[in-house]
Length: 266
Image (tube, rainbow, N blue to C red; front, side, top):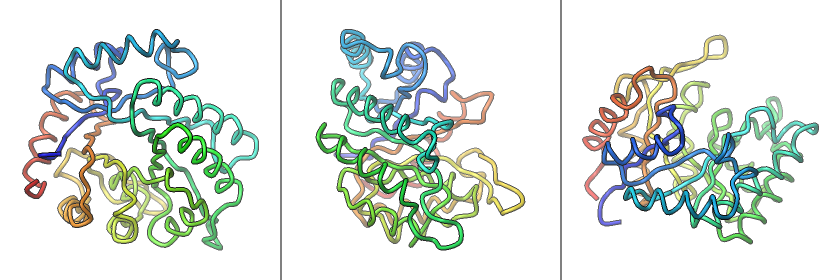
């Protein structure tokens, strides 16, 4: 990229998919992430012609679909009762990403290592291997968004999976809210970051989880994280998020201005 590409997750506008894409275009974003798990745009509901139509619609608005999100909070990778459905649905979203020429599918990771031993959870590793193989066969990247595991725990989990198509969607705010240090994650895994979610948050503790904040008003060391990513030659989109706001459009516009001031020269 000739300059940093700042995008937005259109789901945060809390509008219909087409209206959300239109809003992103009106606000002069050019790169977007959107969910593929709900309603008409869910991968298991959207037909081949529907996928072509959605791609053309985004393109007509001057938008690049940088990522699809595959957050399925009721289907956990570390739960034997739900893991197979989680894998199957994720594979469908990877197929949709291929059909729409979207390079990345991102998803919350959940707990990947054992709380006491810090070892990778076998059922999670096996599931991620299956997803990774499918992503590789489709020419896509599956980017995990960690929040509970950081530093060496995350490194050990990714090493156990050992698949180049399984990478990291870094959301420092998600980590800070659970009491993890995102700088430790970047230090260990900067070269495996495929997507960056830019938002802020207050620090969480065992008895009191943190909460999302306006960009620049929380406790995430965004300057430090961005500097480390730049040193690792990160050139993928910076996707702004605002999941807990009553005025997301205004907040995301302000967040873009704040982020532009923080980013090192391209």
